[in-house]
Length: 177
Image (cartoon, rainbow, N blue to C red; front, side, top):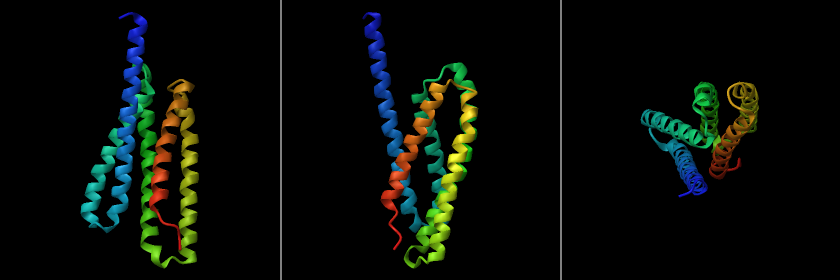
């Protein structure tokens, strides 16, 4: 094989690997979303233990998905991953707030009052606002450790993950009656 053929083959394998890892991760996110919404009827203690395991699996799969798609050099990776981990810890706090909000919605769904609806909407808007502020605050941190093209790629990957999660939630959460 000549150098061009090897490069094409390597690029083909990397693209296919990215697709497989991407599909696997998105499949995991979908499964977790389903488990999360089905979990309302489960016993609290057992569901909490299972959810911790599920969250850890998601974190691991997400990191693999990001690593596969970021194509970081060894030097970039050394600086990128600590910033990534700090950002993910902050995101996890927001996800926990979202889960509590969904649980409150579920608990009040059949007897939703205007006051409860107002509070839920205000909380949802607050979470969205905090998420955007968090993204903005970490932009300079990511720019400090990897080139802007890779920062853009990372933010695209996060946006794709967010879009899948938002879609799955929107599909499963009924409209207020």
